[in-house]
Length: 241
Length: 152
Image 1 (cartoon, rainbow over the protein chains, first blue to last red):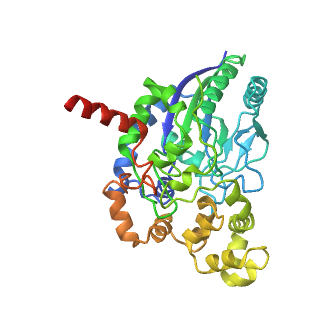
Image 2: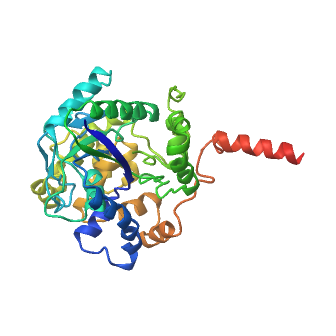
Image 3: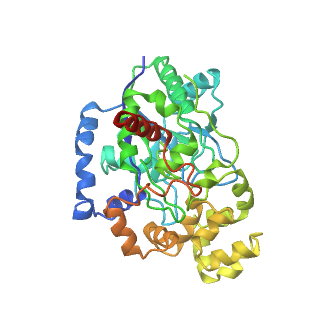
């Protein structure tokens, strides 16, 4: 039986990717950020997951305004890095796990989640930056990755409640997969932040600390929080994961 | 467990300095965003930089959208239906780091913006609500009134 052994949350700020790509991780400006990830990186190297399910959001890379899926599960064999305006990031092509992905798709759709299945998709910094943070800069990523892109481009993104319920359905799907696999789930995105409009630069660390505490202590509170409150307190692009 | 109670309508328009990319803006900005999307290809970035006006002729933009693109008015682009993840591609085509765009949108120099972020960013206090009715989050407001009762 496959099982989820851990969940990891991480930022995916594109500038972190640029710092890695341009070999600037040892500069004083960046040092502390990367030091903070060392422990997780060591832990990952020890645990060696068989598969990662990478929950992230696409930033108008795989999906334009032509098609905006709320939840899109990558079922392809591989996912090349997207050109986000600077040329594709010099990172390995992400290898998928089509068999487990298809199993998850089938299981969660029967659990009444109307998932979009994607058989051809490029992945952007939202997925590849956390892979760097957890695995460093290898020539090949150490395990297959199943991308799950959650819409945050167009309002409204799915509710916290819906995301939580989908997470439960995915756990059920993984645990009903016959092969013995160690699965790690990544949840990537930003804490409070706003990158658009005159209010850009908003940070609400008080809200962020309460959010992180509630993720484990009282997720129900986060599930019941309205989109208005998330945007007002944590920025138009904040607390999306 | 039940989901959040969401208010229908555009309650988010009360948040200052914020352009929520909703279905209306998505409809108005379709071609504007598709233009930005085209800049994901290196040959298109080159063609655009060679002759911006000619390149834009391919897209059925409104005169206002066209002007905002040519003048790099990033807040105006958001107002006219642009989405930040798309308009960021225009900034990347110009070779600007994102911080440059963020500074432009807030009316600060890039250095001032960077300094603000190093100091912990823009505070939420006073930046929650245009009308003032949403200035305090519900939970904090409750905690405060309890506190004042105790003091009384």
